[in-house]
Image 1 (cartoon, helix red, strand yellow):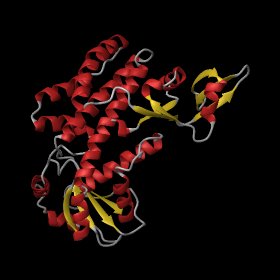
Image 2 (spheres, one colour):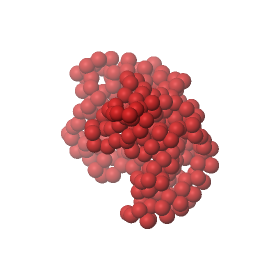
Image 3 (cartoon, helix red, strand yellow):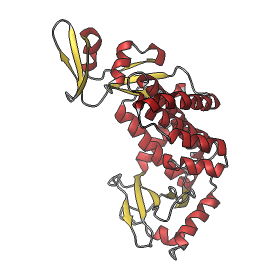
Image 4 (cartoon, helix red, strand yellow):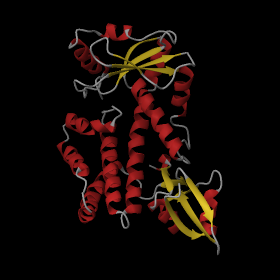
Length: 336
């Protein structure tokens, strides 16, 4: 794990290159939204992966209810600084809900992305470098470091399972798409392993750097193999065979489940047209669709439709619709 001392050293070196100090960075935070309750530096710079072009992220908790999710950027220190203001009540709720039972058991695409956004925000605020804050908020941050770190590992484990299942659904009919999903599954599995070993920076573009810093040449080589995606269908089948075996090895190390609990929800823009003869057509924006018995496809047009169960219990219709990008697949990560 990148220690606070290491974080302070990385941040200090970046600011010193521009003749600035951490005090200058703290002074850059405007108090228009009220006095900061907690302030953390986050991102690739404090974790030691930043490049000369990387900005410095600062996350600031305030009582104001008028803040938005848009960062305020400045360049007055000679380095780009993004200040992200966070509502105190909102971040407390997000932290409390982080490990709530069933949080991702029935998540549609919007809920899945919202959970990822909240986890990323918690990761950067709580696992970042504390710059200043009220004592109760500094205590709050310290007490939540392990739960947030554990949730980050679990997120990448779940993404590995989800992308692997998507790969299997697409393997026979869309091998190139299946290969892309398998590559994502492999990178997520590597991120889970790196995060579990203390590399907590939330950002998959740094997976290779994390593995290099851990000194794990075997996993670093696997990272390159997963990113070496095929360009044609013939190459895709070979990639799926060879890289699938590599993923299976990672899955065994992570003890990933073979039959996770899944949730299927309609993809964005999905509608059902009822035709004649007891048939129905399910489509997205009239651009992509599938036809079948109304008794199976009709319910997809009902508000709030979803299906949950073990992945092996998905019906033939479920699998066909998923292959055509008509269903959104999420995983109940209590099973991962």
